[in-house]
Image 1 (cartoon, helix red, strand yellow):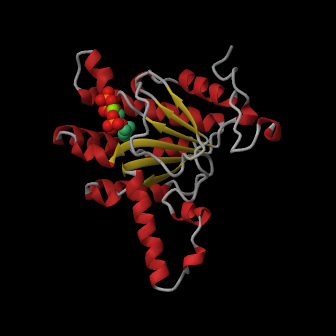
Image 2 (cartoon, helix red, strand yellow; image 1 turned 180 degrees about the vertical axis):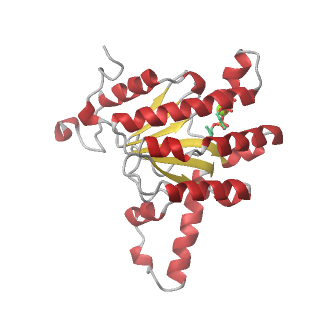
Length: 244
Ligand code: IPE
Ligand code: IPE
Ligand code: MG
C-alpha cells in the first residue's frame, strides 16, 4: 500500500497544528548535542510541510519556539535562531506554492530575523496553496491577553461597543483569525500536554499524541495521524445520531 493509501483524500484536515517535540532527547540518545536534534528537526519540518501541502492540507501551524523557550540556555537559543534564519528559504515555498505567516511576539526576536521573516512573507504572499504558519516566541495566554487588550482599546476609542464582543469576533481578533481552528493537533515526543499552544483555537480539535521524537517523524507518521483522525466522530456537543 502506498503511504497515503490508508487515508481518504476527501477528509483531509483543513488545518493541522503540530507541537514538534523531542529534538533534544533524540540527539542525546545518539550521544550528540541538543542542537544537532534541532538541525535534523528543521529538515523534518520541511519534509512534513511539503507532504502536508501535497496531501491538500490548507493550513499547517508549527510550534517552533515558545515564549517559555526564552528561558533555555542562551547557547541553545542562539543555535535555534541561526537554524531559523537558514531555514527560511523562499525556494521551498515557491516550489510548493506555499504561503507563509508567523504568530507570536515577533518583536522579541533579533531584528535581522524579523526582517528576514517579513521579506519572505511578502515574497511568497501570492502563493495559493497551503499556508505554513510558524509559531515563534508564541504563548497562547499572551495571545489571548494581548487580544483582550486590543479589543479593550477599540471599545475605549469608540470603534467598538461592549455588545460587539462575542466568541466569534474574539477568535477573529486573535493572531490566528485568518484561518479556521485546527482540526487536528499532533504532539510528538511522548509528552501529553499543550505547553501553552493554541489553547483557544484547540477547543474542539482532535488531539493526537505519539512517542516518536520529532526528528524521526516521517511522512508515514503524518499519514498515520491523519488516518487516526479520520476514524473519529466529531460531535461538537451533539449526539452520535445527530451527526452521522
Ligand atoms: C522541541 O524539542 C524543539 C523546541 C522546543 C525548540 P525539544 O528541544 O523540546 O526536545 P526535548 O523535549 O528536550 O527532547
Ligand atoms: C513546546 O515544547 C514548544 C515547542 C515545541 C516549540 P517544549 O519542549 O518547550 O515543552 P515543555 O516545556 O516540555 O512543556
Ligand atoms: Mg521538549
